[in-house]
Image (cartoon, rainbow, N blue to C red; front, side, top):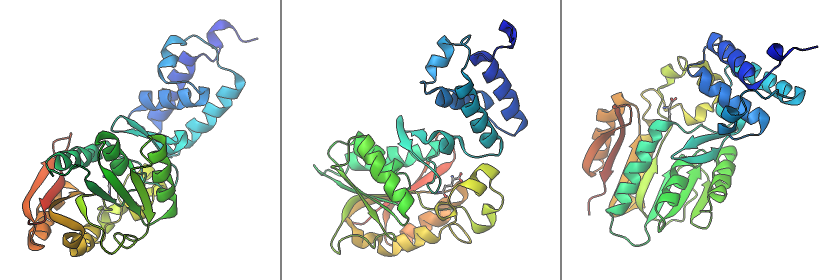
Length: 292
Ligand code: GLN
């Protein structure tokens, strides 16, 4: 018979999981253990703290074992629990969909700023390479008057983006289209702001990504070609004709792409071209305006 001390309480399962995840290369083992256990219990994470000494049922323990094993094999936590928080909102994600990253909040903040200064009552926003819809949906939630079109080339992301727009009650202002960049748009569609987190990892760097990313996340959302700027270049070929005069375009990229990417915008005739740092203090976004 299990004595009190050997019972699988919340505390004991967390301690054991933290040790296991640490050994298997997790950088935030405590947070991950808590997120996974809360998911196995069907509880909000906060409830773990008030139930530390509760014994866990065999059902919860077997769900937890499975989750921890998969995390030990580097499957992303977001896929295991089915969501990731971004811009204080919960975004559903799953295999085939790029998991939103905290640094992308900079792209959202800058896009919201560009909307404020565009001087239009009901601005139109385009989110290209939308993935889970994180950028477009966050913009729609935080700019009540904007209407947003989100485009992704693949079905899984397009379906998740539509679901996330619905979950956050902005489906009537967010249209999700599937297709290659501008291709699914009406011929005369123009926008006040275009925001894009394109695939920008260079092809050689793909090989060196962490196992979590490389083995599980869609390479279509990551691989930006030899210098990572292939998609940005393709977008810039059509960007002027898709923006109203004075309209803004914003891209996420990696810090070393800041200079060459700004050059591409200037060569396309864009003005007010500049770079913005992310919450980690490195260049993460570049922006520019179509000349008026
Ligand atoms: N920053 C991403 C990464 O960590 C890359 C994002 C992208 O290519 N859009 O892998």
